[in-house]
Image 1 (tube, rainbow over the protein chains, first blue to last red):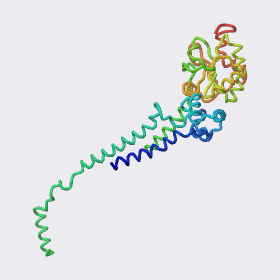
Image 2: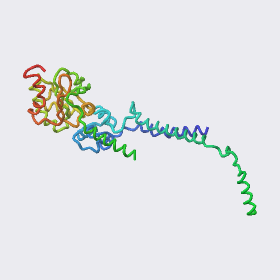
Image 3: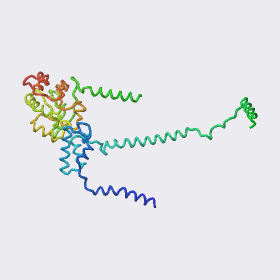
Image 4: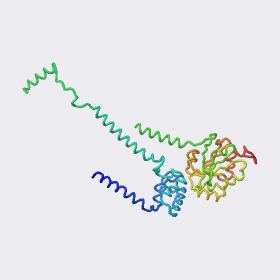
Length: 155
Length: 171
């Protein structure tokens, strides 16, 4: 029962901020913020790093949309409509672009499984100390010499 | 050591590949279906098979494109029965591109390569403006990287088409 209560508390705590965020009005877009999230289509760098004529026209376009009251996502959508998906600095988290985020996670998970499997296999292959055959003592000439030496030292 | 050698080899290969020009004379020029400018339809270089084509890649933010545009427009008006001029607007805002066409009173066909996939990827242009002279079979005859200085420069570039069609002949 205590465990159930703890899980419910955790879920409420996690859901709280997202529910609150859903009620918030969209944050007003700013040029510097968008410049850090979109590319200059001509230079192949972030828009914020480019001062090419094409980048300047892109800034004018963004400023115009900000003045019209568009939020960041609407402006990014408008840029994609103008230049195509490559204008986004980060792939979108929908459609086939999800793989850009999923592949590293899947790769890391597979890597962890591989390491665990290798450790288990290595431990199984390692011979147990108790399974070793008992060490045999010296025999024949060696045993006689050992006895003579032991007698000499009177041990 | 092997990794360093592989990395160096990869860099050298990249530089060599970058130095190679994209299309050579006689190569078939790739076609791609693109939206028209103004919007409302689609078109492709393939639509002009059987005609001589001067394909001009441009953008409204490109100052040399603005400089060559009046000469290109005059050339098109003087020779429209012998050669088709086809504009490819690349990596440009559609509103800016339309303003450009209105400003220079350009009325020859235009296609919009918004992402640059056609110009950069297929034609392997290195900038704007660039022009391609394409024969009726769709093969490259000549390539002109950079702006035309004047109409005479365009006449020289398009001479194979103008000679082939003759004055006043249909294209």
